[in-house]
Image (cartoon, rainbow, N blue to C red; front, side, top):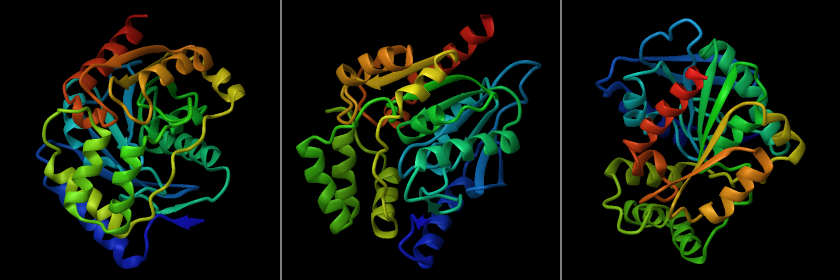
Length: 292
């Protein structure tokens, strides 16, 4: 196992930041932990108990993200649904920091099955962003009755355009808030407005304290074929530099048989760039699923 953290002091600094942000959140919620084979898993839950047969929403953040970064989206989703957001193990946050060197996606799939059973029992629509989308696909839990995959890894290869790589290297080698902001701007849609201060501060903390992980390769075709019977919606931002619609869309339809949509005016950071559109899209998916 490899730790996401550079040392114990770095882990404590990350935990303090996440715990402080969650503690300051003004929405009624529960923060808890469950034990899985991947170690302790932290979750945040908000919203009313689902009605009989109604699925809850389980949110899986992407690389370098966690519940503390997703609170505005969780609050919006929780107005109509029970929402549980899980911190992925092996990513910066409040879950265990270790991750395996090999067979990582199978490991994540098993982890999610266990975490769902303990932290979000009952039927679930899993909403995964980036790495979280790949984890949602890697998991064959019978609790999963639908998947909303936002800028999802695991379906096709991610691309790293030269301007994005040019912003990533200084962010890693000489971390600072301005360099974090420059990197985030490359991930977002051009002209999309200011990068939130907390996001720039967080990414600076990640570069100083953590060993960031690479995106997973596409999942095996046989595994994706097994996922076809479960309803899925794949979404890409119009300006996503990693997973442009022209690449993700055809792969999602061909390899997963999924519906595909493009979110205008957004890049890769859909949870932050589309704070109103993403909750509306998830609610539409859940409502259609319930109606069907």
